Image (cartoon, rainbow, N blue to C red):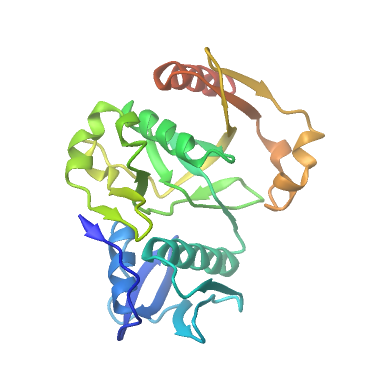
Length: 282
């Protein structure tokens, strides 16, 4: 178990990764950089001697954590923020910087693909979206994004963000059986407020590679935490897709089927998602 105490800033360290083909660097206090190195362990490294195209810097000043993005944006978090909060906000700034560099759109989503066609799970119920993605992965699907993705709005091509899966301890029992060994090998973190979670690496779950570098976005399921005795999918009308929650992404959702998902049991819900996804193939 790793206890995520509210540590004071330490000496700076540098983390270099190659995200969606872009050389990116994070300058951060060493304890945060160490956690980011684990979180992004599956992201390819930067080539030897290559300079970064995107730089994100994290500093502690005036009792605030300041996360400065490559695009000039800044995220400010209170001094007592725990490491998982800082790590998540830093990854978001990194993804946004790469998106700006490539003229892509960042999307908070679990993206999973089969045969080059990707399904994005978006919505307010993030824990359920992650659990369903894990069940699909256990059935032979491949991750493109665990909770972040980069999308080309012109082509709907999705590029991978290979971040470890953060699973709350209360949800860990819902992961499919093939994940048992991965969970046993995962670091277990506890925040100062007593919130515990696992950082799960899906790479060891199946014999096949867990990640695919790119896929074509072919369908979207909106997971807002609506539960039912039996799962169902309801296609969203074009008017709904113009609402602010969709419009702010900068993606033309009319290019693909988008449906509201009511969740039943995990197995039954994944059966439905697989049948629906096959039915919308063109």
